[in-house]
Length: 348
Image (cartoon, rainbow, N blue to C red):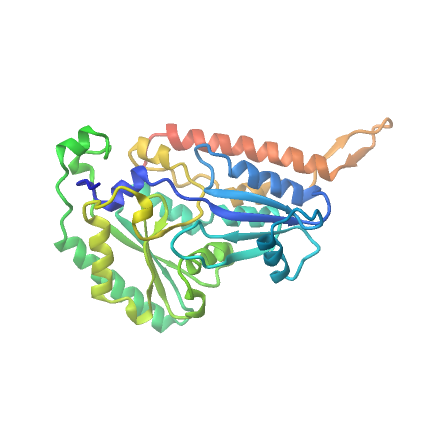
């Protein structure tokens, strides 16, 4: 099936992101922070607005019930004694293996689903941009600046000469697009990302895992991100040139030739977002709300409560994890409500 709606807009309104695959490995019963981190992963994986596109598999490596695939992954990680988590990209035509792996901690859970760059991508896409081109820098200033200049110059030119397809009235009546023709924007922007940014470590690994062998390439790489956080392709080094940029841009603003997401190129990134709320609000997502990582980092490391007969304050790791999960849940509920109900505000 085909329709007149541009790919970038159809993707924003209809292509629900596939789930990134997260495995939690443990030997002993989870307690303390690992238990709180596992609970938070499970909460974030629930199919509700404002949650992350992740699916969780908990693997007890001593039970004998783990799959051979899971055990092989655990052994490749060095069979860690501490609770561990691994991340694979959502299923696509590529299987690129483990994108990232590390200790099962709350800060790693936060960085898995959210980061400043992803929040900026979400903000720009919510305001109607056709695509945000993430330029993953090499760390060599001259190369990075040259790649950025080539990309920005070509995108500026394309925004002057390209035209969006004319929307068919029947497609509007059938609900294939929620905005009128004059509500569509032909807009591209570039967002530079340092490869060694510690806050973006897991997101960088996601980008590099979107296609095979990208982790072996140290040069600058451009990733056009559109729709509900879907990365279209990777342009490497000297491949960031006019004809390749033109080809990607033409696909993104062209009429959607196939409404089935899986028949289109690209892979979904793991993001914490209420995409339905973004579409219903018509854009203008608030950008000054705290991120999941900021919320978790601001919480106290310990919680004390009166539990003994003598009234002595006793610290309990299980209580810390339980109360932490409740607090994060409440804060997340507030965020979801704000996403949907706050008045739209333009990005400064």
